[in-house]
Image (cartoon, rainbow, N blue to C red; front, top):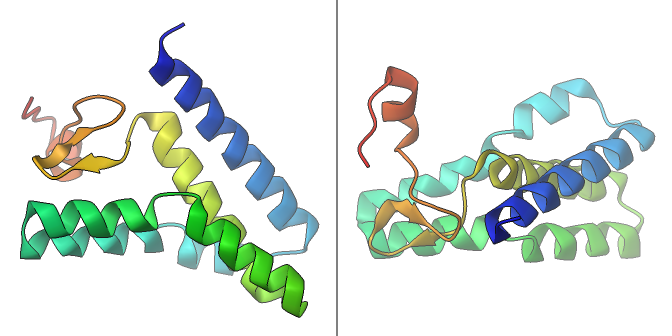
Length: 129
């Protein structure tokens, strides 16, 4: 198997584990739907250029921050913080599963997994590779 296949399996594992824990905690569907795409707001960093965009995207799309937030949620006994962290981790898992990786400052389409089309172009059927 190629390394990117392992990373996609890792993403699937993170997604399933995060959603299972979220549902086990009784997380409401409305919160899941509300927060599911929230990490993608980090793409707004690309308005300041590819270097800032890649940095903002990568910071939000690594597991470090949701794990830290989940740890704070456990430490403080806050189910809400833990649920937010789990939705965040699930989002990252989905991204890895479908092949979206961490970004290089050369542009949004250059990731550690492979070259990806910009999401809008992908939806429109245009491939910029």
